[in-house]
Image (cartoon, rainbow, N blue to C red):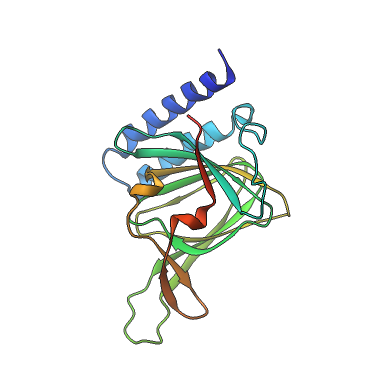
Length: 198
């Protein structure tokens, strides 16, 4: 069995398990159970390395490699190969849940939810916590989740990103400028390259 076929088999088994769990919806409990399966896959470090999923060769922050999705674009798994300077301000994923598991390197995720603003000067977002995603850990986001991401330790990143739907099907997405208290449209062009690596 080649490395690619071994990786594909491991991914298929993991996604099938997660799909069975998530059939009843993206509850906190279901996301936590699914997170454990994705962490198990991410710990198979021999299947995910920078040789097969290279870092950006320019000033881009990351390259995304699509490894799995069903015919309808659901259960889309990417390997994100991120530069040591990677930083994304607060942003959402449309109405899509997400699980991000560490393979190599560490990144901080600050987690937010939208606030019910009453006046024009009210903050758009409320910080709910933060987590460092590294090998053996993961973060989950429900469909209304918002996160801010930055690499730590001046080290490149290799992480698994699983979404309910692929980037193109996540719908209207927003990024949030906390200093100006504004929400702005998020463009897929900001993600860097996306390669089909199935």
